[in-house]
Amino acid sequence: MEPNITINNVLNSLPKYSLGNDEITINIYPRIHFFSLDLSNNDGFIRHGSMGCSIKEAPIFVKISKSFKDKICSNIDISKIDNKINFTKIRDFLNVNNSWNVKIETTDNAIKNHVGIGLSTQIECAILWGCAMLSNKKLNIVDLYRYGIGRTSTLGLKLFFNPGLIIEFGLKTKNDIETTIYNIENFPFNIDFFIPKNEHSLSGEFEDKFWSKILPTSVLNSYKISYDILYKLIPSIINIDFNNFCNTINKINSISTKKYEEAIQSKNTIALIDKCRQISPATTISSMGPTTYLFTKKDTKTPCIEYDNSWRHYRYE
Image 1 (cartoon, one colour):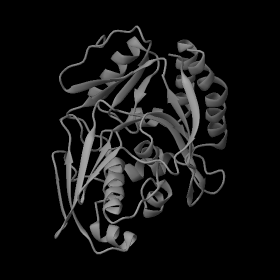
Image 2 (spheres, rainbow, N blue to C red):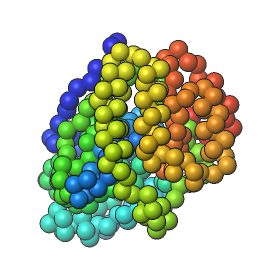
Image 3 (cartoon, rainbow, N blue to C red):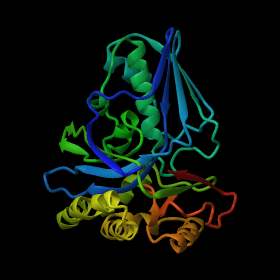
Image 4 (cartoon, one colour):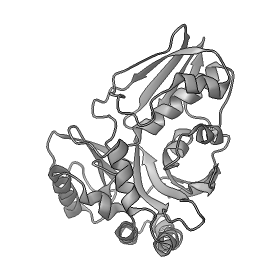
């Protein structure tokens, strides 16, 4: 099938869910963050915007039910989630007196927090949205943003409501999220991901210090990235031009924050990146790593990359 890019508005979109008797289950997915669009401070705030995709091979199920006491149990380590799940804050936001029992489950033991796959945002979205549904309130993406989710990147918010492969445009104003996205279906290339079992990225205060040193980026670089997406990246997808696609991805990453993000990776992650680049020139890390991704042609067999058991391989097709 030919590549298809549509302009969608996710304002009234819903995540995948099933609703029962005082119980709801929401499907969420880890995500890969390819690059950001605009990290300058041109308008007095950082707009963000980005390109990324959901890892649908690794679904996570968030089951919420009404309860007499707040409780969370999970077979994923959620102890390091950036913004701790605060049921009191949720009750205040929804203006209800309910309590909830939350179960977070996945069959994939490679999925964990702080490896560059956006787990915190997805879990926070699911819990807030599910608690609202059980309180007879239907929240949209603007509501979740106003609650405080997605303040440093809106990619996870938009993939929560529209899982898949998207280009999204961050913020409209300092306090208003842009709800329009480019939704890409029948993507003509493979995307391979490697999630580490033992490595982690920066988090908390260390992550804040990292970004404070390199942000904002220049207005010129943000303009160049936006130009290349519109005039080179999107046409290369539509025309199934792998070489031009890779060249554009590499050009974008060369002027974005990726070089700084790669510089802080462990020796094991750097070694994997080098191996991946022998297969494809369009290789780098998701978010701040260490999860690594690369683009390959559709006829590329997998696994053609040598990696050991400390990494878990996935493919977006």
